[in-house]
Length: 320
Image (tube, rainbow, N blue to C red):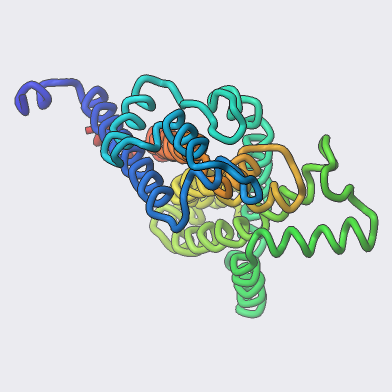
């Protein structure tokens, strides 16, 4: 078997390794989520019935049977994995509709917010890093301090501050529940500003590290200007760790969107997840976790594939 795998083309081996690793990540996250929901204090049936609803023991047994909660935990776990493997995301206990339909109706607002936040963070980070890299100690210290403060700000707290200042006080932007491009500005900033601080630190470090490398000194000796040197060489080298980090944090934006979407009462997967966790709607929670895992795996695979396009030296080793 090992000899057969070794005889495959490098790209095929790469895809096979990433597929196996991705399946392991999805399986691990689904397993942890299943255990967390079932081992948490309280009864799942209570969440299905409702906090204030009175249910007879017979009704509770009926609900448990219909949801498959009367079976042993191992059987429930096996059924959950089998269902996900078949592509069936299950049936929402609380909302009484297919989970796939529920997620598909709420996916686009979350994707829109995540992409908007990532693009905004990248633009702010590149501008901040290129304008301050190589400057005097005072400028770099001030920039590093500002970035540290930005990274330390929780997105949900920053969202409340932006909402209070720019919407309620100054009336510059719409408040909660707003739709359209204007309603996307405040949630985007709440997610993008902490991320921009982190990315700017990485970019500046790479720019300053590459500034004294031989290829930079050679380019300067040939008379290449600083702006051309930045655009053609040093910034290109800084894109390698930036793309890796951007792929990682884009997956985390789905988690950050949970609180931000609830603060701004935006539609999206964040509000669905918050409601599902509160009611312990296991099929919805499991499907959302699995979806986040798949997005994370796919993005990191794409990032690895893009690296050789950024740095031609990485093509020499191939994908093996």
